[in-house]
Amino acid sequence: MMGHRPMKLALLSDVHANRQALEACLADARARGANQYAFLGDCVGYGGEPGAVIDRIMEMAGNGAWVVRGNHDEAAINPLPGSRRADQTGAAWTASQLSAAQREFLTTLPRVVKRDFILLVHASAHEPQRWTYVEDALGATASLDAAAAEGATHVFGGHVHEQRLFFQGTGRGAMGFEPTPGVPIPVPRHRRWLATVGSVGQPRDGRRDAMYAMFDSSATRLVFLRVPYDHEAAAEAIRRAGLPEFYAQRLALGR
Image 1 (tube, rainbow, N blue to C red):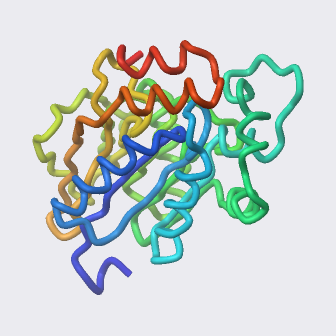
Image 2: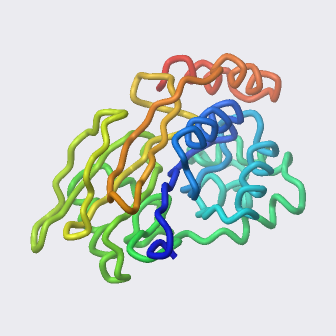
Image 3: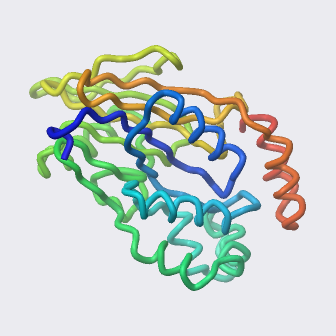
């Protein structure tokens, strides 16, 4: 439990089968003293190395990392032939790359994990199975209210591939702002907070550097981070896999 030890929690979401970005973020988190890890969904999808990425996350889960399910993970378990949904594009290929153990791992992932005052979810804590994008104050308020009903004040998620922070005082709707990477932000428990931590494996804000965040439970501070990685190697893995060229090109564009 968090009350028993200071926790430096690395929050990683939307790895999207990008092994190079994942390893770069994990190395950065270790250098910053991370002693707990959380993966906030979409281990797979788009990228060329789903098996290697799931193996790494399975290994870390075996050592205590928390992992929640994302919509691309769910799509890889149950591909829908002919579906034009974004999370179904390439899902059948991803499914074909998974071992029985990897499939079982994805199948058993929960959509929500709560630890003390923290709630981890891929999309929204309000009806998490709907995979709602939390992109504005209205969506953040709905998620925060659902988390509050579970006794959580801090919600950490991904899904939108951008880094944002929302806060809510007593009796008010959420307010949001875009954080500056590398600048710690106080997130005291007398307010409610919702962070979308960005995407490790496929940033979409016009910058190619991988995204993740670190939460210090003793200082109640959150810092959003950007990490350079070998995006050309990740793009080459996509091409080797025979996936759409657009998936490779967008890594260099950050789109």
